[in-house]
Amino acid sequence: MQMMKKILLATLLVMGALLQSLTLVQAQESVALYSAADNYADSKYPILGKYGKTSFLYVGNSYDRSQDIWGSERIYIRFDLTGLPKDRLIMQATLRLWQYYPPESNQTYEAHRVLGDWNETTQNWNTQPSWSPAKTSETIAPSRGAQGAEVPVEWDITSDVKAWYNGEARNYGTMIKAVKEEHARDASSGFWSREYPVKELKPRLIIVLQGNPSLTYVVRIGVTRLPSGVVSTITVDDREYDSVSLNAEKEIIFDKGTSHTITVSQLLSTSRDTRYRCEDNQANVTAAGFHMFTYTAEYFIEFLKQPSEMFEAPPPGWYPSGASLPVQRTGPDLLTIAPGTRLVFDGWYFNSKKLPSDLGTIVADGPGRLEGRYRTEYYVNVTSSVGRTEGSGWYAKDSVASFSIDSSTVAAEGPMSLLGLKRSFTGWVGSDNFIGAPVDPQGSVVVRGPTTIEAVWQDDWSTVFTNLVTILLAVIAAGAAVIIVRRRRNQRLSVMSK
Image (cartoon, rainbow, N blue to C red; front, side, top):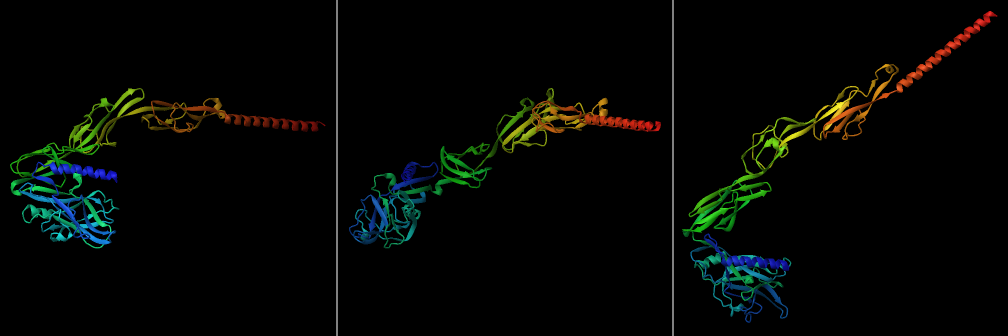
C-alpha cells in the first residue's frame, strides 16, 4: 500500500508540474487551477458546522455514535477562472479531489452547479446556496476494500466551466453530494481541502484549452505502409506530442501566423530482423494541410558463402523491401581438391529452403539468410578379391553409403575344389565408421573421408573333410567286400578239392 501511495504521489507530482507550466507549441494547452474556496456542510450540525478553515472535506452519509445523530455532508468548492487565457475553447475540465478516508463500500457522488454566492468561513448546512437540480456529472469513490485510501477521485464538469468561461453563467462553483442522502453508516468520504499543506494533494481543476478556430489552423497527420498496431511518435518542434498509427490520423492545432516542424519516428522495429523506415519523416508547416508519411519495410539479410571464395554477395545488413541484391557464384560446378575428395555446387538456400535455380540477383522480400553452398563429397571404393561388389562411388560428407557383395560363398580354385574346398565371406574392413557389425554381405558406413572398403574371405574346408571321410569309408567298404569275396571263393575251392 505504501509503495502504491508513493507511485501515485510521484505521478501526480509530475502531472502537476506539467499541467502548471507546460504550454504545447500548438494552440492547445493544459492548465491546473487550485481551489479559491472550499468547505463542507453537515446536516448533523446544521448551525454550528462551519468547516471552511479545516484541512479536510467530507461528503456522503454518516452517523455520530457519541450523539446518536444521522446526517449527510456536501462539499462546496470554487475555482477562479479569471486568469485563464482569452479567446480559447474549453475542451475538457476535470475536478480532482484526493480521497484520504474511503467509505466502507463504493459510493457514487454527483456534482451540481451552484447558483448562489457562499462564504467558506461562515456557511453551514442552514445557509447553503441554491444549486441546479440537474447533475453535471457523477463518479464512484472507491471503498477501503478497493484500496480507496490515498487515491484521486475526479468529476467531469466541462459543461459548467464552459458556461463560466464564456460568461453564460456566474461562477459560484460546484456542490458535491451523495446520489441518495439517507441514514447510513460509514458511507462518507474524506478529501483533503485547500488548507492541506501538501500542494499536490490539494483540490484542483484541470482544464484543457484550445485556440479559437478563427485564430488557428489544423494540420492532419497520417502514416501509411505500417503494420496494424505499430505506433509512430509525433514530435512537434522537438517536443513529443502524440502518436499515430495506420488508419488513425491525428489533428494538430496551431495559432495562425506561426510555423512549426512536425516529425514522426524515422525507424520503428517490429522484430529483431524487421523494421520500418520513413526516409522523409519531417514536415514544416505554416498553414492547414494534410501530411502523409510513408514507411518502407527493411529486412536484415545475412549472406553465407561456403566456401567464401566461390561466391560474391553483399555484406550482411538491412535492405529495403523490394531491393534487388546481386549474388553470383564464381566457382565451377565441380572441383577436385584432393585424391578422393571434391567440391560439388549444391545450390542456393534461403532460410534453409533450396531455391529452384542458380541466381544472379535476389529480391529482398523478407528477413533471413541466403546461403551459397558447395557440398564436400568423398569417394568410397568397395573391393573384393572374390565376386562382384556394389556401392563404389561419390558420397556427400557425413552421408551413409550402402555396399554389398553378390555372394557369401564361392568354390575355391585348383584341384582341391574337386574335394569341395570353398571360400566364405567373413566381413568388411577399411573404416572405423561402419554402422553395425560389418559381418553381413550388405553393409553401410558413415562417409567421413575417402574410404576403401574391402571384403575379407577365408577357405572353408568343412566340405573337403566330409568328402574325404566319405571316400575313405567307401574305400574301406570296397576292400572289405573284396576280402569277403576272396574268402568265399577259397572256401569253395577247398571243398571241391576234397
